[in-house]
Image 1 (cartoon, rainbow, N blue to C red):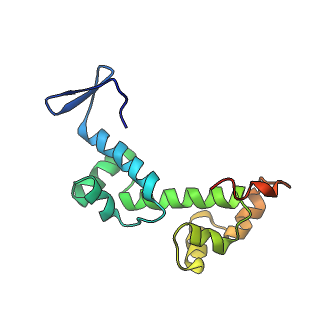
Image 2 (cartoon, one colour; image 1 turned 135 degrees about the horizontal axis):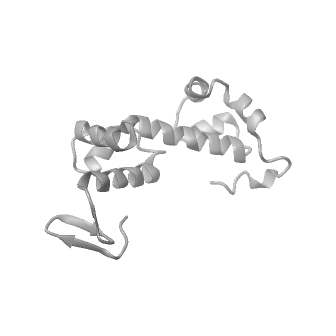
Length: 141
């Protein structure tokens, strides 16, 4: 989170002489929580409870600062991870779905195609950057 040169002053934080509004702190904490838990914790309620803030308030803060709801941020992070796994591993689409915590590979396929306009297999073929380096597949995890 904040570096060691953070000072607490009557409930506000000052970072390198600059005031950090509570909303910005909460957005940073939300981003950190999503990064830590996106594979297993898919409900926006988990994040609002973890931050001790109502979901409607967290969504308002998230939309104001990031332009996305908590649910959309979670979906974005899962999609980003799916793309990474498709590009840099040799895991099957089914394995990637399970790796991302999805119990139905067909659902993963449909969601991925809806977002990218192509199936995971088509995406992999058009974006494969392994080009013969198959040993890299398990190192990305």
